[in-house]
Image (cartoon, rainbow over all chains, first blue to last red; front, side):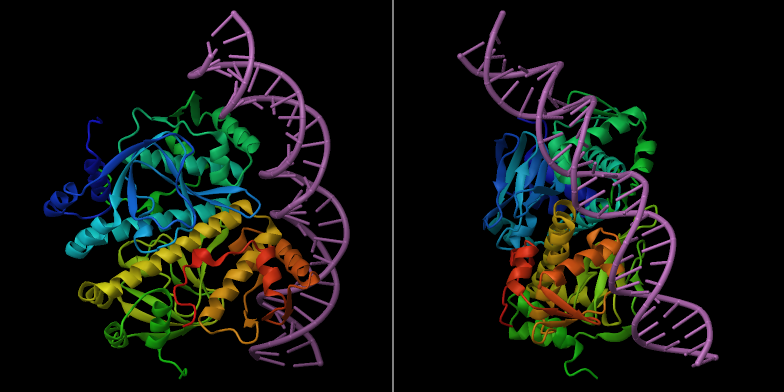
Length: 244
Length: 244
DNA sequence: GCCACGCATTAACCTATGACATGGGCTGTG
DNA sequence: CACAGCCCATGTCATAGGTTAATGCGTGGC
């Protein structure tokens, strides 16, 4: 269906963060992956679940979310094509967060027993997976900082930088234009802001000529300006082979 | 010096989160650990460093911290006795955060090459370490939620619950009293609040009879009330063997 | 072609929290 | 003892961001 197979998406991701060799790639290609499509706003996994498989994002945008006692939602991280959001489920039996689609999305499911078997026999792949979960953690750290200590405007710019950088590094951006059918409410849940204030901040970014939007397309007019506005430094993303 | 050796602190921690066996314990006991004391407010590791060893907290309180471009500090997580804060350094060569003592503290340093060798030869220990980093990530997720979507009062109560729960699970609490010589400024940096507001919220907690403080000692008067006030649920800490 | 619905936008108003300034109480030190 | 350095406490004022509600707009269903 898609021009690249689901293993290719996964392999491309692991290559971009880790040193996997040809033999590992062959192993990865042999993993059985079951593809499935979802609408936006669907909970793939819920807090308290004990899943028996993980999934790789093949297309679309996913969020790890949590809910407070009084029902407010916080998105704690985004996941784009190639990411394996709930890889931690492999070693943490009970889920402590939900994974919800933020846009229509396609996932590839991989059974935990298959993953465990591969990790046991191919330590380099195990390390690559471990490293993937460590990068997730680094992103969470950055988000704590973003939400805790940056002002709304900076926060908004920062999250856009992260999203765009990550989409670009998996080849999902053409000519500085990203297709991001994400609602302002979802952005608010990621930033700890109200939708109204998200709207205000987006307007400010447009007014200052950093971005333009047409429908769900976000056009970055001034990448350098956006990174400055967002206090954005890519270190925390731990991209190893950005050329891939 | 201390009644327990530095390996014991580490082993106790791994037992509390994972299934390590006697043979693993023997291996862990043989790891060379170099102990060292630090004053409060000392940076053990800085953003950009490429450390060659990790460390286990033997005593005191540590924080993983980040700084925004305009110099504000965010503490993204606490670490108590038994925790290995920068274990991720094993697979992420460049540090994306600092690790600073928040109280006087004692650390035990373990060289990365020693850790790597052990992980290769003892997959169950490797899994335990991986699991430890996954729990750190779960805590980061909770903190994003705490800072992003909870009000100052709830946030304050939540962080106290977490700290006290974690201290208790490593036996550092007697009779509901915790010795926490942490400044209100540091609490503010953890909560994304000003010190003034931290002070207000602590007073509110005292006024409502949930806690009492004498000097650096925090006395929990009403644990259940505090967990309710803090919207606190222990799931995200993934404690496996709480009895240990 | 009309309606319903979800989403973006705007405006008016309100409040939780920040900023700043001050005083007071420890603790270590010369 | 006097002094300096911290840290906690308190009051006042300022504001970033929340809340609510109304409007409009595009899209898909019928």
